[in-house]
Length: 530
Image (cartoon, rainbow, N blue to C red):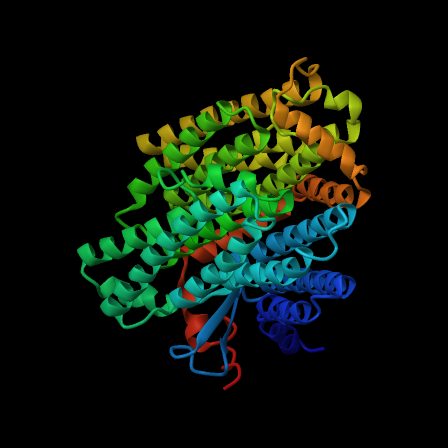
């Protein structure tokens, strides 16, 4: 095969992460009464997506760095551009691996619980649509298609969040729906104003035309987009909805939400801050937002007595690290942010899956009701311990490497706001260590309290009724994600290389803009489909 043919492969594979899950969702919906066929289709489709995303990352990183197609063969200014660069393909690889692992976990849980029929029958198409929405958001080359990606994944998440229909889930789902609709309204308003000011929503064109817009109008558009994406990413003070919404959902749903959905918001912030508003007037604001998100989130985590809520607050807190890197606006800061996003998606998802296993085994996630799990189930203890110390940033894990990269980038900038952020990052890391140590001591190490509440008794009764407390099918995907988290540490050097190159691509927006407007590869490919 010639070099030119190899260069075509990223553009051939580019629509696959969106189209294949949508096609599989249609099939699983048509086969609603055949759960085995649904399982086969879902697992096969997401496995193929993982392979395609890995291939795109390798080819994009070794090739031109950026590839684009215009859906339907329309000229790029009129059509829907899909763009794959180092940042988007890296996000696709991590998200597709996590999505597949959580699917396997949830299927094993459904089989173990004897729920192979409803609601699993609607779970498959919904989950596949969620996967397509996430991929569409990462590949979008214009603001409106990005909005469509958000709406696709949010519509699916509404269903997944309320699966089972308990009162607590419906209440949490209502909060989630209201906040998400508010976020979408802000985002849609911003898109309308951007179009009114520039005549386009194409990101490549916007990177040029926004420079001609009045600075005050630019600032308004910038702030509106930041508010819309900030709600989705759960940055302070727009994060109050998250700790009340995620913990009530089923364990695999909470895990995939915690790992992915907020990161789509972070991705949108990275893309717009670097491509549309480089060095914008809101950069200083982002620094204080990052600091407040880190500190308020981790202080909330320290105060919690339930493992799910504690992890939800740490999720909010560590979003602050990613915004920290973006706010610095340097190559080192962006590289650290990209690396930290990839690390955090894996680790946070793993911790929520382990928490699901703990709840299944012990009947509760309350620290008052748990105790001595390390003695009773050493495997669960190991599965929790490794990602927990990784999240806390203990050397030599990837959490430590990502934080060091971000803190070094802050020190290199050297301004007093950057140094305050560095101090906030160190304090957040220490408090994260305290939070996970608290969980370890009370849930896994110390003896349980003698008096347990009625909810715990009911939970134990449920766990006993289920019988198979830790099904192998749930343990294997969780273990696989723990291994992936460790593997990120092992390949941290090459991964930092990819994130460094992605950061330089982001700061030099010319290849992205030129490639999208040409509708092909960065070295001058022909228009696809035209």
